[in-house]
Image 1 (cartoon, rainbow, N blue to C red):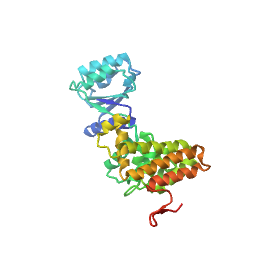
Image 2: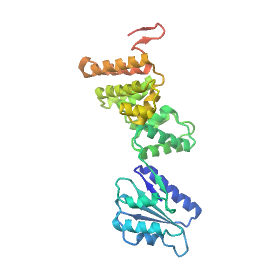
Image 3: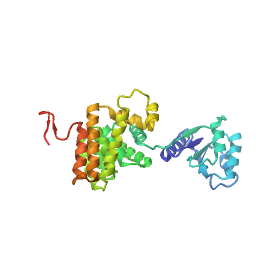
Image 4: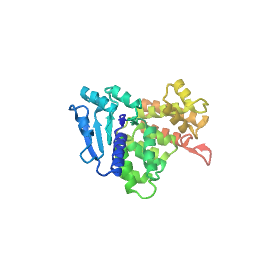
Length: 323
């Protein structure tokens, strides 16, 4: 079995799952660990050979992306004559092309090998999907705002997985934003994009609170306005477009996931509110660069305009601007 790819938490779970399955079938399972990058000749054949009492064997091989020539030769030979009752798991992080011949042989489907791919979880959408899957697998509900706060708290997927499992184990019922803040509020990595996400979603209280926390953490107002401008440009590019995600991505030099995210964010916006937000971003950009003595107020006004989709100080009852 080949477990490939850089996402370690997924690889660890795959390997642990195989071990649990084999041990459930036979508690006498013998488990051996071998390092492919520090390999002694004959080791693979020794640990896969039938034991005196015929117990099943599991061999976990790490460091295949750095394997020695000796290991590569013996692993290729083993594929030609696998041992009955032995399961061999090869862990390759994809950090190099070392061992490509071995990987190709397994992928060719010679009858004795399978692959579990563990690609990197890189962007926010993928981390959201990963975390949502954690809760869905445990039949646990988490509301969207709580999920967003949790994603903002952890950039490392292994830490994110551990946090999900802790919430699943500790919290009865639905997981709310307040619960996540209680557990991990001190870890939230407040960035310009986190503020922009809340504002564009129309969550003014959370956007302002996150903005103040970001400013108190030393975030510069200039790149914060730039983050808003980038998000608004993405929405403007996809709003009302009938082309596919791939076609829009090619036209605007965006990633497919960026197009999908911008399309989701474009819901609830129209030409008038989007134009108003873009004008507010342009004004705030000038003000935080020296056109105003109060860049903090400029940011708060920008956040308010975007979150409310209305001019700053707009009174919906009197239908006029009060400030």
